[in-house]
Image (tube, rainbow, N blue to C red; front, side):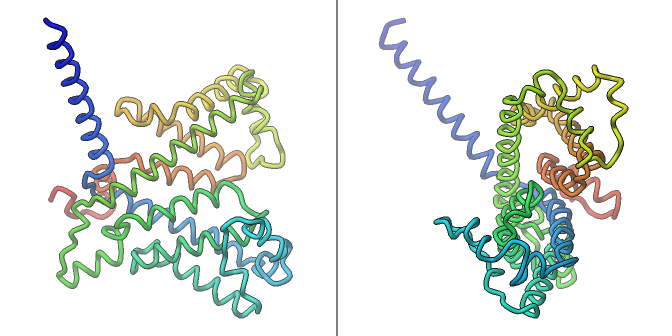
Length: 324
């Protein structure tokens, strides 16, 4: 083989590799996908939004009123007044009547999103309301609110109400064609965005854990379950099983660090998702954070195929599936 032939063959191989990469990229993001997984996330995510915002009503004026525990001015400074771009319509509600009206309106929007009623509109309004509450409640937020905002944002992207919704039921009653139910590019993009975002969250969570000595020496799980501030189930019996504490600690940090790699292959995906349920289920049951644990499990549904979701929902309410 001459030098020219070798160069030509190498250039051809590089071009073929580039075309393969481009085709894979297009397939990953822009192939049509059924909306069933996105719709299931809408149901559970919308219900979580409704519940977590309903809780504020237990003492709404203390959290959001003119004389709230964290003043409006302090919230504006923390959220956007220091030069950022944060904004909340709740900053401008002066009277209790206006505050309660806006809050009840937000709860109606979250309920509509959960039920899939006027889903395209309710999804946008739910996202705006979620961000507004986050910006108004600086100092009273934690990971749950960030996960809620993430899911609310991506529910705007795809046809979250194409199935399992009042909108879909109304289309069937009216004899209208529901084109999005069979598959759409926007449904795929929405799910991919959730998947990628989740991988980034876990990757940086794992990296941050690697900075702590307790994850290296295997004692991290013990310090979590033995902390009475978070303890909801007494797990101090683990003190008699130090080897089990070490295994749980190392398994957790390994799972979180390598989630972004091992969740994609079909062979390892079930293992990673099972570990996600175990880790977040443990947080929900043992560490007094049931809403955060459930919200993370809801986000992990993004890696469940729409065919499996449709089959599972079909067991609850037999009907024609995706391929019918």
